[in-house]
Length: 309
Image (tube, rainbow, N blue to C red):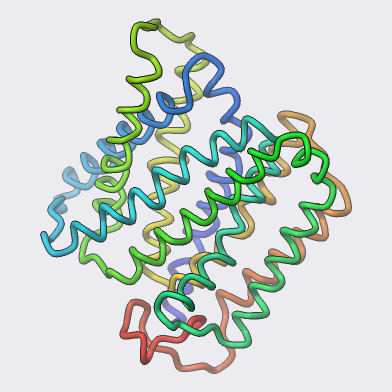
């Protein structure tokens, strides 16, 4: 990982942490009147169209080379469809901050998936970063064990969300699609929205109504800020950094989610959460800095790309 890439990625990581971290507490509010499928179908479609329109207005081509469509579709379904469904249901069944913790086990899954599927063995530095991230997640899991016991489905769905996100990220990084982040994000959001619309129409058929302005406001905010801006920032990070490092870059999001949950829903915030914040911050610092290593360019051939270089 080059220093210029890390320098470009850091502001994006900060934006991502803020917009995604504050997003989790809004999920229960977004689905008070509509189904999870309807909420996600609407938000993904609108966000995708918004990003493609913005890219076109900036003079970008919104075409994706035909040879890369299979990878784009596969990554969109594995990441965006699975993630959006599983994470939203998890945030409804268990406290939103705890659902975020489970979803953001993604960095560990990413490192393991890149190693298992493509032989990208992590260096000791990345192993340490993953261990610190895992410790941070573990500290947050301890005080929430009662919530998981009462709603085991929320626990399973949270982990499923993280695994789907990791696999989609590794597949997309490996494909190295030659398209701007805005264009790639827009198309993937629209692709993932297709199956969600099928589920939304199946569940809501014959039950048409106009939601309240509060629900429309919450869904609109989630569509524009976390979905459009957040996903554009994420895919830009994936384009700049190796998949494993990009995964570690997201570990501060559940910390912000915990703080937001404490403010909005009075979820717990104490010593465990502060310890987790220290661990996750240390993992992020390790992943985004280097100590005199000469790694290959992100997206280069596996033989010359190290997992933390």
